[in-house]
Amino acid sequence: MKGFGIIIPGEKMGWIEKDIPEPGRYEALARPVAIAPCTSDVHLFRNPAMPGNRILGHEVVAEIVKTGEGVSYVKQGDIVAVGAVTPDWRTCEIQDNLPQNSGGTNSGMIWASKTDGVFAEYFIIRDPDLNTAVIPEGVTIEQALMTGDMVTTGFYGAELGEVKYGDTVVVCGIGPVGQMAIAGSVLRGAGRIIAVGNRPNTFALAEYYGATDFVDYKEGSIKEQVEKLTKGKAPDCCIVAGGNADTFTECLDLVKAGGILSNLVAQPEPITITPDKSGRWCSHKTVRGGLCPGGRKRMERLLDMIANHRFSPEKLITQRFYGLEKIEDAFELMMHKNDSVIKPIVKVRED
Image 1: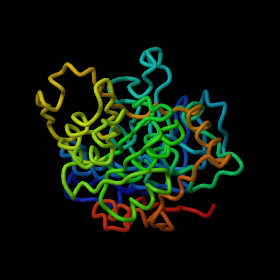
Image 2: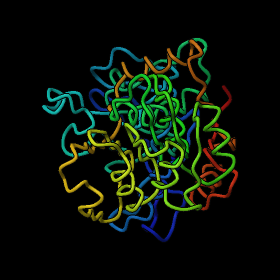
Image 3: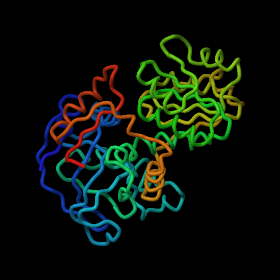
C-alpha cells in the first residue's frame, strides 16, 4: 500500500510504500473515506526528532475493513467517525480520568507521533469499539470529519475554560479550532465572545459561529484592544487556539483575577512569564491545557448535536480535493496558507 508522510524530517515529504498492516487484538484495519491535513501535521514534519518513513495524518472518516480479536461494536463495512485522540482504554490513566495520557504523557494521541497515521490506503485504528462512532442519520461525511479533531478540540477549550452563562470570553487564534472554541462557548452560554485574528474570512466565519466583537492582532496590543472594547473589564476566560509564546503571556495578563487561561496549542517555544504578566503569582489565575479526551461516547454526543442542528462544522471547510493522491495538494495548503485557507479536506471516495 502507499501512504503520504515524512521521508526526511523537515526536508522531504512524499509517498511511502509499506505492507498493509494486520489488525491485532482490540484493533481494526480501516481505509479512509475522507481525510484532512492539520497544522499539527506540519509541526510534526518540521520536528527534527521525528523518524523518517512515517505516514502522517490523524483526521479521518473511515470504512472498517477487518477487525481483530476482541472487537464487537464495529464490523466490516461500517463508516465511522474517528477521534484524533484514540486512547488505550486499558491503562491506569483511564482510572485517573486522563484518557489523553493513557500509557504516558499525551500518549492517547499516537497517530504519526508514535505510529503511522491515516494518510494511507489502509491504517490501523486502536480500540475501535471505544474510539469510533458509527455516523448517524442526518450527519454528513464532511461534518463527521470535522468532528474528530477540530470540533472536539475547540469545544474542549470552552470546557477547560469553564465557560458559563454570561461570561466574556476571548478566543485568540480563529483558525478551525478557534472557530469551534467560539461555537462551543456559545453553546455553553457565553454572553460576549471576542475573536482575535487578522484575516477577513476568519472574522466573517467567527461572526457566523457567534463572536460578538473582533480584534486584529496586527493593529496593536491584544490586551489594550480588548480592554477598550470592554471598558476595562477583564474577560472571564481566554482560550489560546493560535499565536505564539507572546500570545500566551498576553492572554494570561489579560484574563481576570480568578479567571482561566485555556490553552489548546502545543506551545513549541519557551515561555517566560514575568511577574507583571502573572499578577505576581498572587492573582488566583488558572492555566489549563490538554489534548481533547477522545472516545466513542464523546464523539457520539457531538454527532448527535450536529444531527439535531445545534451547529454546523462543515462551514470550516474552504477547499475540497478528490482522491487520496490529492492529500499532497491539501498538505501544501496547510504548509503555506493563503488568505483563503481555513480547512482543506480530501474526499478519498464518494459518500
